[in-house]
Length: 66
Image 1 (tube, rainbow, N blue to C red):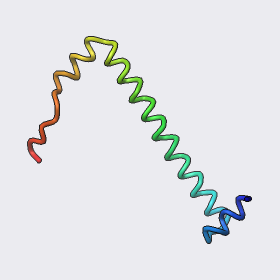
Image 2 (tube, rainbow, N blue to C red):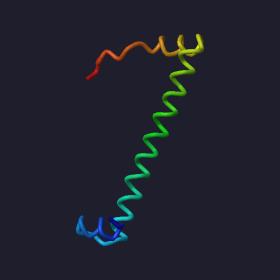
Image 3 (cartoon, rainbow, N blue to C red):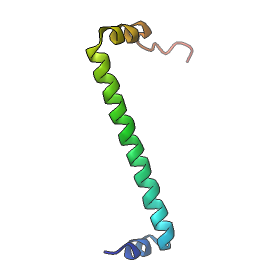
């Protein structure tokens, strides 16, 4: 299947289809980057007593003020 075929199946022009594909991929890459950064922070917090203490001071959200 070609890109033109995929666009035709969706009932849009090729340029519209390519913009949609690019936007979807950009979102996926952004989420992937955020998850990787979160894993890095988590590993740092796990390995560093000072970081663990910092986060423990924040506590667990209680839902107060909701």
